[in-house]
Length: 233
Image 1 (tube, rainbow, N blue to C red):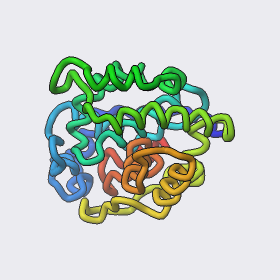
Image 2 (image 1 turned 90 degrees about the vertical axis):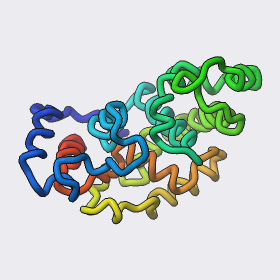
Image 3 (image 1 turned 135 degrees about the vertical axis):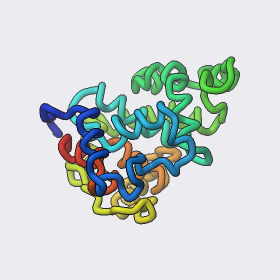
């Protein structure tokens, strides 16, 4: 089983960011701007905080808390299909409320009544999830699939991290144009998840899961975000 790793000291986000501003080669070729600012919605404080402090940081270890977090990422990346990440990110708290903070056991027990309730979820904008029946049903369905994986492999984390050999792949790209949308590893993960019955887990979605949970460090070489993610690998 993968064991939790102690995070190194002196990993101040503000300190690393200041060092980045002082280095002309640490921004992926965008001056002192964040490398991801060309993405839709990427200049908002919420998006920047997510990319700087969460995206690419390894989600690994033992226990249901880690498995629930991986299940959350899988569900949100699946919800993003056909939409932008900024749309889903602004709704993330609504998703957490709707799906019991992505507790696997609770979601695995949900059925048609819960689907119907979420389709009628009151509110608009960031206060409500995307009301798509197939995507809502997939969350509950995938929760049951995850529990089957846990029975077989001990944890969802062990299973998903096995596709990268149990340790983060360190990206080697410098330009945003070089960033792949899928890889051999994400295609292998997708194929196995689909074989097990998971929904909304195509190769592109699986690669997004890998990027978000630090299975691959896809911040550009030289950026302070890359350095921080590598230090935490």
